Length: 584
Image 1 (cartoon, helix red, strand yellow):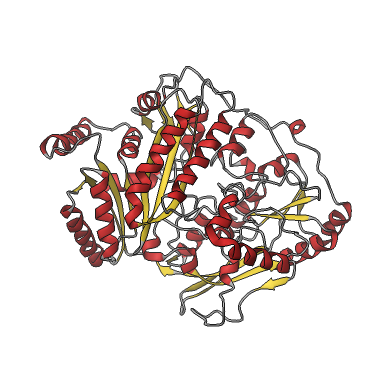
Image 2 (cartoon, rainbow, N blue to C red):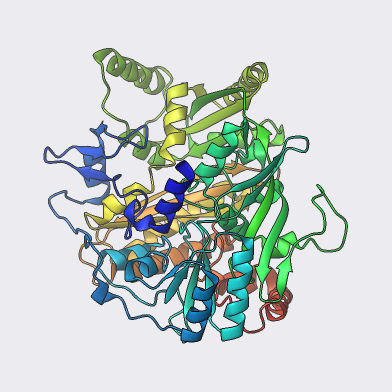
């Protein structure tokens, strides 16, 4: 019953997910009639709660007013969608295979975009550009083989679609594409085909979404531990295609560390290794042509992954530091000693205040008193400046005794850098907020505020420089571009490595008075990316390139590197069947 329900829901994703915003249709932030912020639905720890400080923070930070609304178009009108350009010979042969397909306007629009700001902003205004002409739902690897063969025979364009969470314009249909565009939706390929308990591996169809993969593995006592921020909606195939990273990579690894075997269907045939061994020395690793290929070479259909027994014990924690510099120094030392917990993330002061504004209404006077006491102890007794302090959130997993030893080691290191333990609840709340923070962008757009996040990786000796310089560049660019109100410009260090860290940046601004706010936003983001590269940061740590960042690819991987990518593309896909125009 559960499997049939999942299959139905993913055929009709638009019935449970927003077509013009993030996440579930029944879940959103809003300001109620009393002017209080609340988070609707029943799916999250924060759901159904009043958030008393959010309105003051929102209005004070952006100069916005909850009296000035910019509501989204509530429903999609079919007249806004261009009629499909169908290749009738392809459609006829496709139907003869029995593989489900649709050229319904809602189905096509839903799979014609990701979650970049410009994509969602346009949809909220009812503006629909080029979208797929037909959606097809393969049920297994062999179905994908048939679809790709037919696409080659009839020269149609294929764009693989997994969870739809892309933030790199990867799913946008090229407006210049004149062929019939087919969205190949992998959502029906959502089964665990086998679990090998001796080798601790699982062979899984690539269309499965993260939360469903973990739920099914948990039933057998296992997990992958791979938890990207988008794990509720993103797919295994998407993780492979973008070289994804998860919040608990310190224990479980990034996707490239978890993958044992990959099967991908290309116009030239199926690519896969001849065995499922942990490591091979047989020339360049073909997995590294597949991982990060972003739908340009073929469709990932099946993946063998490493799995682990579910952790016996899990414990959250948090540390408050006098300033961001000392927090970064602590994370560097933790990385140097190779004792990072499953997750360790450091928020700057602006993000700390933002997180504090999202605290739900307390249920008792005693809890409120304790919160006040903690604040007094940190700011008055310990002398931390409320406008400089920052917070790290922690998650430990594993054997209980080892977790407690590990916890002591990390807190001892933090103390050397002025860190104070700030409690389990703050750590758990910070970790769980990861899954609801994306809903806040929709709230902002309801009140003339637009924003986005982007990420990079950077060597340790450049972390402070890149954080300071990029945030300052965002503020200056907004001023130069005529933004009338000071923007929010904030960052956090989210992943640590031996040689560097991943840094996330967030920025948002009130766009009232701007005639083309999306263009201004894109100019600011472009400048911020230039600043990242000038400060020694990478083009992307895990979001990928897509079409949004491909102008920097030559600078990133060199002329020879670009030539190699193009040569692989030309051999594997000479007719450009996978014509999404990502990467190159």
